[in-house]
Image (cartoon, rainbow, N blue to C red; front, side, top):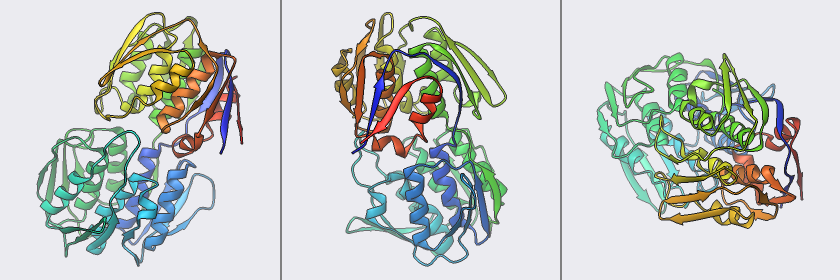
Length: 417
């Protein structure tokens, strides 16, 4: 099993190019199921979850041609197998995103229910209830969702809670429904807007993406298009947080500052100097960070996917920070690993009290999920001595060449078996 070996204490300087967003690329790949024409996607990140999604789409009958890195031409002229097996879904919960497109295009879908998740429950009941409201007949048989509909019908759907994949699934399904669908309490994440932009290029009629009410007027068919996946805002935030913790002068390119307002504000609160422009962000940090308290919530509030990284930064801040996690019930599993590096953290329910200390000490730690892996890398970068991060296979699900990018910015980090 591969590990990362980190020698901390080095400032981050130079330039890093940001990859396409995993959380945008996965639903965008699924839009190929909605048309018989060719969909061309650019800026696709090379990640394990993306590879899994492509394999799943190919199993359904989608032909995928990749002539150059980061680009793919997808053709679903013939969908032969509207199924997502448990073997696929158990490794990547986002596989549920094929449910809506398959049902809308072919009138049927047979999708495995997602299994457990390390960071907490992520039920798909909102997906199912929304599709049933649109006229689908859905049953649960031996761990699979069996869905059928001659043609979905537009309706008003009020989601009980904000769900990104639920919003995306229902929005894709509604593009080919008869009549108008109104999604209320919809997710507002930039990745949802990116998906809507692609669907509109394909001929969909969508209004309100980026707000909590999205209106979709169904059409008879969609056509192909070319679309560029948006930059990864979580990768961007991770590198900026690392530079704030380590100190230095780091410029990120091929990114978007407008998707990170609250994160940039919190990093400024920590003491970082930030400049932004079209496609770039520059962060300079000269001193020990100030503590930053935060509370996670759906976009546009502070993202749960950045909570762990900020906790690592707060471990060496000059004061005490209070971090409250409201999205996932098990997203403090990195706390015990940070304590192995001598961090002073106390957890009370869904709140962590982090008392900053001047330095962390290197040790062997184990990653429990994707963002916990990034958290432990940041902690290793500021720790004295050697830190070894085990179980880094999580990283390859959401960060493209993270150790290579950090190395080019001055970090001492290597991957080893």
